[in-house]
Length: 229
Image 1 (tube, rainbow, N blue to C red):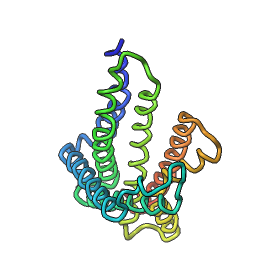
Image 2: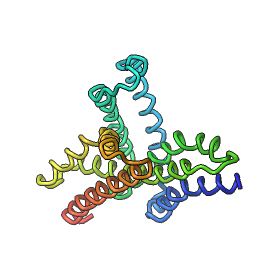
Image 3: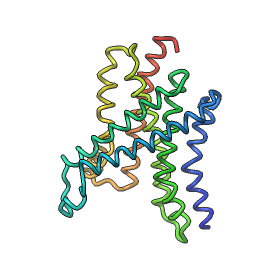
């Protein structure tokens, strides 16, 4: 039963990533090495973020009173996540091909590295336990939502780099990019105000990621039609 539970969690986490790579068409471009490169950029970016947090926000947990939430301090910490946009920018510039291939390759490589770094060890240690726990299923579902979020963010970064982006869409792209580092804070704030459970928060994140993905796709479709991609 333990192995069965771990196998289910493993499939729920990694199968969507494999399917996204296999059936999106980017595998035909021999982009596996570029996915690995994007994953390497993710790890490098996280190390840089850790260095920035350690430099400018030292001992942040011990400096806060237990039970006290400093919103301004959390916003400042979240601002460091702008480094993710820079990392995705470099990943996109390193990938040849059409726009959709760049976006999907960077997003899948970036998200795959994230899930390997943040989910693999907890699943290996926890999901193989003697008792079934829904939190591991929820964690696996969150990784799938993260893939959609990273694909949307990569699309927005790619759109921002385009000089032929229609001027009427530029404010929307810039606004969504500016809010990207604070996405988790906004979602958690809404969950706190509405007293949402962990599963309800996951549903909120899925709805948010879907709305962001559809918006990015709509802007991308307009640009692709305009330039004949």
